[in-house]
Image (tube, rainbow, N blue to C red; front, side, top):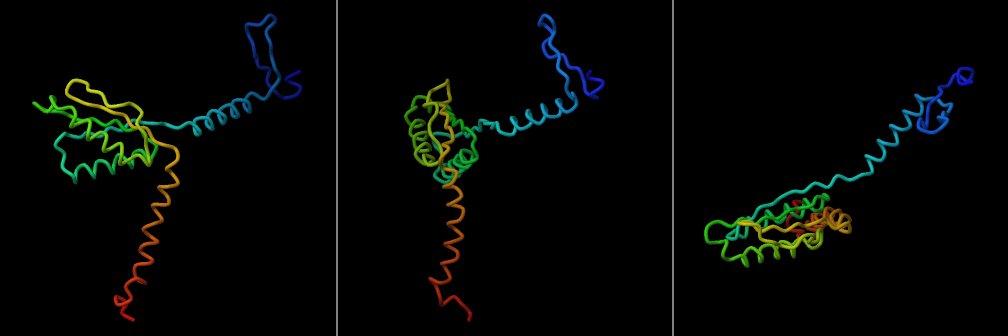
Length: 163
């Protein structure tokens, strides 16, 4: 019957008694199955964990740069593991590391939230931040805001125009 219809006879449930078979175009079936698998892979999100390392005696410029990068990672949808590395006697003052981690969490509160609270592991203190789903539109608004500022700045300073 399958040959008459120019189709394939495919065994669907071989362990059933009697075995269950179906008449179908097997090539078309395999193609559609591959398309469904491809679509499900496309819809799944790959969340990777990025790590940013800080020191207790970090300078303000380095702190700002690293924190800006953490916010960028969170905006892209990555989780971020923050590590405070203690050297020598610094390990006896974990409150300094805790202060730094809390400052980072405050600075990136618009794009991320604390997933794992700070904890001391030997000479390192770690905390994990997870991206917040709401801030993605805020990031695009921030991207348009400087363009608006550039547009208004020549009007604010008419003396700068050569004409």
